[in-house]
Amino acid sequence: MNLEEIRELVMLLDKTSLTELKVETEDFKLTLRKGLSRPEAIPIPEPKAEDKMPVLLPSREVTPAQELVSISSPMVGTYYQAPSPDSEPFVKVGDIVNKGQTLCIVEAMKLMNDIKSDYDGTMVEVAVENGQPVEYNQVLFWIKRS
Amino acid sequence: MTTRQAILDALKGNPGTWVSGAALSERLKVSRTAVWKHIKHLVADGYEIESAPKKGYRLGGAPDLLSPDEVGDGLATEILGRQDFLYFREIGSTNDHAKHLAQQGAPEGTVVAAEKQTAGRGRRGRTWFSPAGKGIYVSIILRPAMPLQQLARIPLVAAVALAETLRGVLNLDARIKWPNDILVHNRKIAGILSEAVADMDGINYVVVGFGLNYYNDPGDFPVGLRMPATSVQAEQPQLVSRVRLLQSLLYNMEQFYQQLLEGDFDIALTKAKSLSMVLGQEVRLEGSQGPITGNAIDLSEDGYLVVVARDGSVQTVMSGEIEVVEPGSSNR
Image (cartoon, rainbow over all chains, first blue to last red; front, side, top):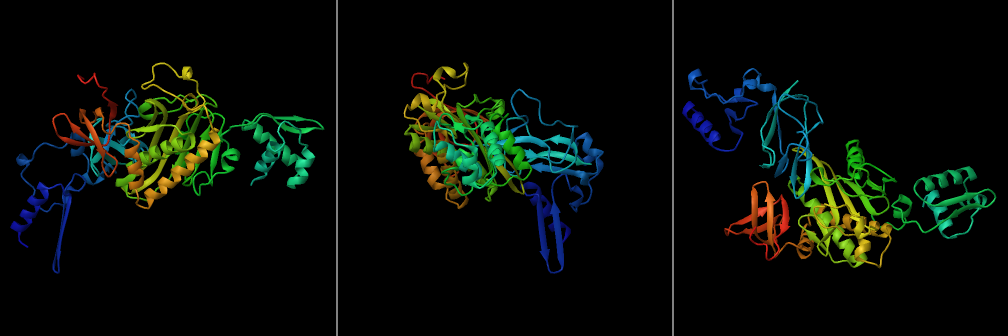
């Protein structure tokens, strides 16, 4: 497999919602991953600094990427940031979060699913707006592990 | 039958008359102190038991308590309420307690019942009116071994189980306001609060809470409820005890739940459709993607509401507050 073919695969991965692509032959093995947690896994030449789009949040620029972990929605539904419309959000950016702590509720068919943190760390990004629909496996939070 | 149930049976078998502690002790092969301890427990559960020296014990009135002794006697379930049945004269919220227990590893089928809730909850911070002895406030713990994608079927199954129970036991015209409010004659008689802890690895637990208005007088309900309320007593003078109703509810819930686990959701879905009070009606939904007005025509295979919106588009809805648009107010 030559560089051009790899480039094509990278473009393909980028255009889809896939986050990981594995190609394996007898003498060759390539894994492409997309997503903020493992950006170093994409084997393309680092673009020049001026080509980079400034899309990263400030907190991420100073954070080693491998420490960032995500929490995804286990179901299709509606995202709620707080237990009731009048109460404070379960969590805000910058909060210390603990493993087992409730981060939000995802509701479908009036079933309220408490989404809990799998990690101890600091909330870096809340990726969804209150009251918005979310998809299965959609990232809800980015947490910097401690 | 437990010793406590045997004592209760003996007292119930001699209504209004004294049963001596010595006789109970002899019959049940336990000490008189043990008999006395069980009596104390029963009194704490709310039974009206008089005790007098040399006479013994006397049960006053016919209790209709949601205690494990009452509900367990004649309960036909295999899982629900079989292993752990927790009963409280007063509690904050049965759902909160059940979630707490589930978090600590309580098994599937655990039941939490209460005579009164001081912080009875609905969804999204709403309260559930829970005066002492007037309703059935009960939560059950489930640990369903099924795909995550089917998790949201549980509230619908619970609604069908409760509506079928009210229809079967009390002959009430109980109908389901999608997805899981129970109404009789357009008034809300019961609510269901399903709460889960599930993540991408699977379902940890689900707590299903039922709040059923039972002995309330129509004037008892607080003003300003979102929906007009009613109770079993207000709708059906030919009452059965709360105990019998709860036994039947737990049994029906278990039946529909088992079918769901076995992959058979169609029976519940078909019932949900036939008992629905929104299908065939013009409805207005306040959903996460904005308001929709249109005709509710069907439930999807997952129980989602299928609405033909006014612009002709067909929308499948799984979330949102629904109201039936009454004829004459269609300008909304």
